[in-house]
Amino acid sequence: MRQSPRGEFRRRSWRRGRWRHRWRHSLRLQLITVFLLLAFAMTIVFIGGMQRAISTGWRDVARPLVEDYVNRLAADIGSPPDVGRAQALAARLPISVHIDGPRVNWDSHPDRDRRGWLQDRRNPDDRDGLERRDWLSRSTADGHRIVFGVGTLPWQREPHGIGWVTLAALLVLIWLAYAYVRRLLRPLDDIRAGADRFGQGTFDTPIPLRRCDELGELAHRINTMAQDIRGMLDAKRALLLALSHELRSPLTRARLNAELLPATAEGEVERAALLRDLNEMRDLISDLLESERLASPHAALHREPVDLAALVRETVAELRGSERITLDLAADLPVLSLDRMRIRLLLRNLLDNALRHGGSAALPPTVWLKRAGQDAELTVRDFGPGVDTEQLAHLTEPFYRADGARQRSTGGVGLGMYLCRLVAEAHGGSLEVCNAEPGLAVTVRLA
Image 1 (cartoon, rainbow, N blue to C red):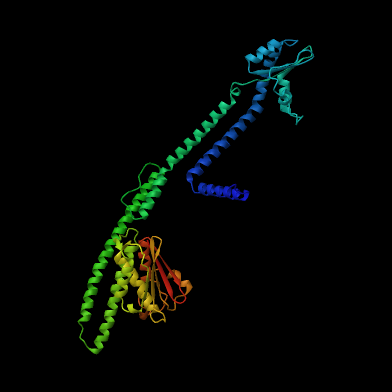
Image 2 (cartoon, rainbow, N blue to C red):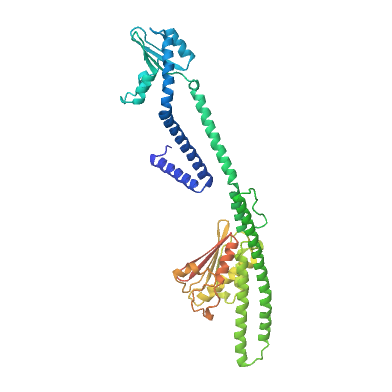
């Protein structure tokens, strides 16, 4: 089917826009364009300058020589003009001869417009044409006029061959320039690939040092920076392990001591408050350590085949108040390779939030689990008051809480949703929060 003119125009416009975008984002193409434009400009300047120099300075030098040579040629042809001699001259030399007179009218190149070459018909005041006519034409005593010109030059006998050779040479030069520029900029590709590896946490393979120029020095500096970053990450990991060990031990001892307090009426209240504070400190330390592990791009997941529907049922059954949660789990779910412990952490945080903020609503919190192509989609919704629209984008940030007063009854320190987002992203998925009106719905997509 023939395409409409408007469709063809759109297709060409799209191609031009794509080429412009590629040219703007390619240093090689820009350098080659600059090279070609510079070569073209230098050629024009050189040719124009040489023509100007020859037309002004060399004309006075060449004119006497040309006039003397034309006189000798006219004398050799004779008066009256001898066509045989003129034909021999035209065959031996790269010149053309035109004889016009009362008895002899002959032209060595009859296909040429002699008058058009001597003088421009559109410009009667053409001085160059008048000068060429004075230089290259002679009148004989018997009334004939002999006009000399440039004949068939050697390179004009095969113009197509010379043109193709010139085009091929130009293409070869362009290809050589592109190959050289590509070789010069090859370290940039290595630097880009190395930056991608370092961003993913792979520091074992440094950027190869192919050059000893500025790009080679840049690659060396980036390798040094990568090793420094690796050292800082290792130090950070060691610090987290030390904190985990050093902080949990005194918390455990403090909890034991609190449980051993005398069982009095007043002491029971104080012990319960102290145990609650110690539990919050323990959970805070655990959440901080887990968030640091998940936020690292080289965090390791212990993946295994997991029946997500069964894991949801197990996690809900472990919660206090599980009888208030409604489950809607699909039966055709794919078996996914997941980190069971971290998915359990995600489920517990989402369900705790749903029970805390929607447990007193008319409808119980609901969990939906369905198939989304080759992925699984989990949605946890409560029917509570929800949050303001401007706060939705901040719910997954660390230490952010919609409750600005941070009352103890609301629980948490603002790391639950942040951990959920890190767990989903670590598995190659996503987490989305939206107002369900009423309530809040959190959708997690796991690949």
